[in-house]
Length: 69
Image (tube, rainbow, N blue to C red; front, side, top):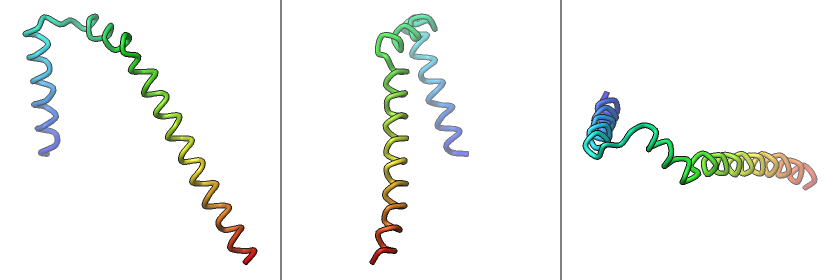
């Protein structure tokens, strides 16, 4: 409940700030495109998947190594 209230206040604050500065949705979208936010998020996601796959391989190989001992 508290998280929802905090989120609501954050959204309201951002909306008020954007309105006071005269920002439009097109300007915000342009900022995201300019900063390549979606590409950065995709890169982070791909790196995270790679780390998870490495950990799975490490867990599987540790079981094999233990069986040889």
